[in-house]
Amino acid sequence: GDKLELTLVVSIEGMCSVLESDTSSVLEKIATLKQLSQISQQIRGNQRAIAAVATCLKGHDWICRSSALNALCQITEKGNHHAVQSLVALSQHQDASLRQSALEAFSLVAEKGNRQMI
Image (cartoon, rainbow, N blue to C red; front, side, top):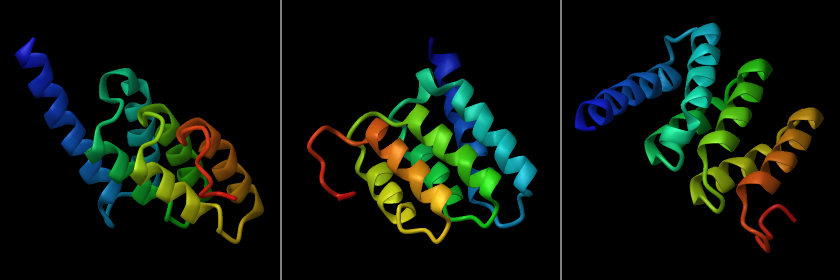
């Protein structure tokens, strides 16, 4: 019960710190994104985790950005404003494959009728 929740909160904070740190390696960030994806059912809608994952969408490494997109789709409930805004920004990236991925992710994250990507 309470002990499990407390452990999960502490673990999420540690993972978020790794994702937001300038000193974390790309491999550390990718591993952390995979860990968050694995516990997505337990943390779905967690604003702290969503914000941390969204920071990885701005990184230079395409594998890390791709992992972040995947994690974002798994931990975000439909209509989450922060996730939608992150995907809108990513849809304007210079990399065409990343723009395409953002559009695909948008369909999983945005609520029906959201016109921000148009």
